[in-house]
Image (tube, rainbow, N blue to C red):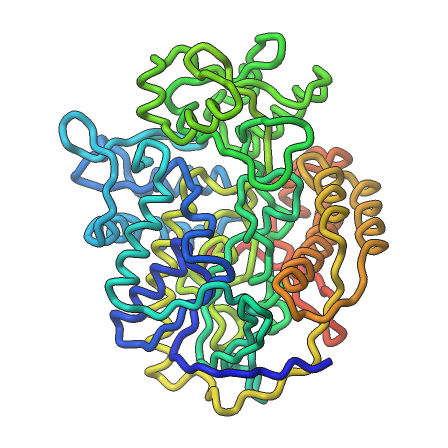
Length: 540
């Protein structure tokens, strides 16, 4: 059955998502004179940004660098990315970091200071220096979100809460010309615009336990694919090593225990008090996240347990509470006192390193479609994201995307919204979410093999029916179903272990055969088509 829009609105740019990337783009585009409309499927504060604890990884020369350089930051990022980062993209994004943070502070963001009044810094996994700035101890994301929302409201940028993006409108030539959305009552409407920026976050709700909020359902990824865009590196899903363990039946968003706790000297131990990371990596407990998550998973298998412990008892209890108030409150809620009790933790789905292929300016291969933040694959993260690079990426690429839209619009490169073609009937395969989450957690989390990936594909296929996309639930479940199917396919295709992708039947990294990304687009029948793309080390 065809969806007939009942209302319309117009803009120069529609931004989908109200996290760090989306709000940065909206504020900057408004400042450039564009008519901006922001769409969020929940409320403006319900995205992933406010849950970010660790901080913003950035080198601020002349203020508190103490010998650190952007070049060192680039090298740490490339090392963590396990050979699949685009080096020029890494360099471009990280070089823009200082200006992005300075500008955010002008918006009113307040970062923690040391006793000398300089920005306080911490160190996280994979970093060779103390370069992570933070706010509210472990509430950096909340402060970033607060400052950006205040800037958006001060500029009176129009926001549509409780509206979910369903499908991109396109002209006969394939350019994006707007967006079909559903409001909170399921009433369809059309937002006509020559530019749409996706800043919809990740896909954490594909798994039973995740650090992501309930809105992280891959709908931006699915929308981009249906519009003709390419996605890449989707097999690399980062599991955060230390999510608070609240029981074997934990579902949905679980409290994060920021990596900065280990930066302050906490260590991982197993149920018998033996150190988990000793001898595993030169950086021990501050090794990159993929290394730590894999080591924890191996130790849990060896000991027959479903969690390990993070021992921070060396820290004074009051000092812990002040430095990590969010973590302290989460621990207290489950009866754990970090001053005397090791914190029970386990890995959980955290960040999608892949996404919609885009440049560092947010441009995708579809004219008029842009992407920024976790939904995008800029080449910054490669096979494994370096801790606290994500907020920085959102700030930098969000701003660059706003400038790109303004430039493309002024140059006459974008499509005419008046030429939008009518939408076909919208329906898609939808799997039952509980089955999908349990299946992906069992077969496509940390440690995968061909038999398990094949079994997962069959189980999800048996739980799938075609449904019309007339509700938020249907749109989200269809997106998760599409993303899960692609992830299983590319994970089976990549017969090696690299970064976040661990194949137990192919445990070694193979640079000769697999030193490249796997990209996916939909064919004319709507089925995923895989093709390999070289890692060029350039901004393509």
